[in-house]
Image (tube, rainbow, N blue to C red; front, side, top):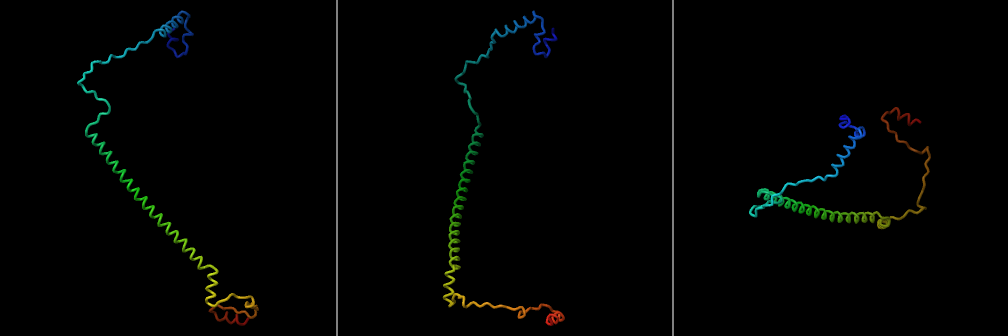
Length: 167
């Protein structure tokens, strides 16, 4: 019997004899019927009015001064960073204005170059110099025969030069 009671079998009571099984069930039922009573320790109700009761976070004077100094330092650093950011932003704004001005100057110079190269301006400049447009009757085409062509000989060897002339 003891083997079944202390074994790892999930329902050991199934193997018990009927009398022991009934006894086991009654013990379990009795445990469930009796309420559990918890007793809490009695607190001291005699509080002396003269004793100070400390509540909350307790800090020493040095700790308070250190925390305040740290806060002031962080505040000063934050203000310093904000001033630096403002300075950088104002420099960026000035550079952007200068860039816009230079970009406008670039566009103006490109337009000026285009006007100088413009075909009408070229015609006007040619007319001022006394030039005129070529007409078809002024164009002459020259036909060249192979026999009347010339070759340039680039050699320092006299023998090759004489052979080339003899041809």
